[in-house]
Length: 585
Image (cartoon, rainbow, N blue to C red; front, side, top):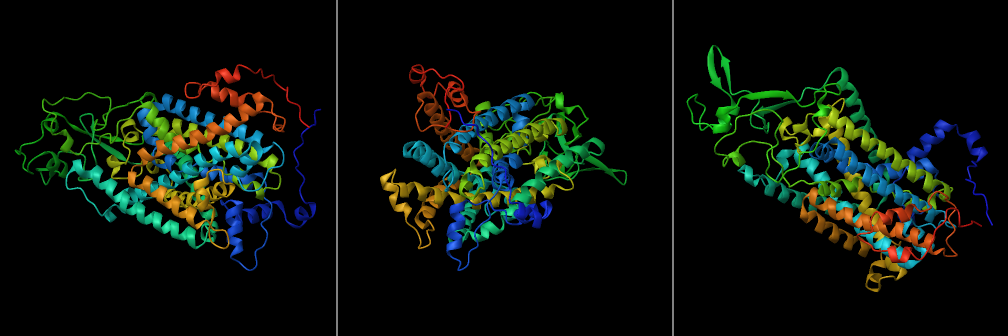
């Protein structure tokens, strides 16, 4: 028996008559929150008078939270470096692979969301109540660990922005030599990251209402930062920003210890050496002993952002992988030196890590996670079976367009050596993506800082409650202690464990090392979601009757692409799936 599925799109006519559409939208934005239903229930338990939250629609309840959670730290801090290292073509492949993975998962999740009544409590309750506690527990644990390490990644991103681009003088550990810069940065990340984690955990422990009140601010930071990037790209067509990059031969120089890109200058008809000279020579005299490569090659200055119509896109089409310590060089002739042993002590821009394709996939993948932010509000939605599929899929489509367009725009506007300069050392320590933005680089710096702060707070708010829900279900016996909390249900013990796990990620101290770990947890989480959908479809279980009709074989295709990791061909070979073979009641 086939029953036509209809989206319930009826609105309260009296509300629409009393509140015009624009004022109603503004009112909903004013009450916007990026917290789950359970979080707000705990918050309201502390208050004597708690008004019931209005039922959310697709835009406010699903689309905006997903958009805010997907766009984040990787876009602002690593996207330009990924484009410069992998090239436009391979970056396009990386973005397409990761976005396709999340799109297939969203389709499977939409089928789960429309399989009967959507329970309140978020994605964990939705999956466990629909598919059983085994799948729900597996997805929940992977989702919990992924969210916890995401908190560590966002905190590390916050500290990197703070110490690298906002107040570099605040560093506690300072390197006396260039070889010690990496260790000093890691130690600073550990100290400041631990302090930041402690402060955020205290805020979450005291009350999440403070996080809730800043949700709209964090969303505005993300939206304004994206708009600033697009505005900056358009502006480069008419007036590219002035961010010169100094090259010695074909090598990129760190622009920290000098102000003029020249070896000598004439002052009052007298030839004088510059600060750049003193960095490569043993004295400021013209007859001083200098580095061999410095003597053999000339200094040139190029524009770091030549603009959209400059034709630099052809140079950035292909990748430039290399080991740690490799010099960031431009494809132009230079005279090599016979002795390169002193290059590591010179102020060149170098690769801080060994880069290869799969590593870039692991670093980039966290930037497409966050697709479950809408399903986490299942109890707050007016029509969850309609809002979760539409809002999630539209959010993924929107962010995919943003990421793919950013790959092309960065490759078409920014010089290749600046793209591969991860920390902006060649442009006086400016954030590379900030140099492209309009009206000022500070728009991206401040916007990304508050965006990372908000994302870190939201991770520390949501992860303990997810662990508490898993513990209360009794799926893993030794986790049951974390189901207890304060009198109002606040997960005190779960917050403590979350902070300890998050601290282990912060002690790693490298965003590039934490991101692949985070990617594995989310990939396993998405794997179980697709596995659950595929098995329910292939086994034709009686309680599997999703009303979302576009999911057929998507989950099975996901596994065909990953058959090396999970050999399910024997199981799948016993069943034949025919399109539209499952009838809906």
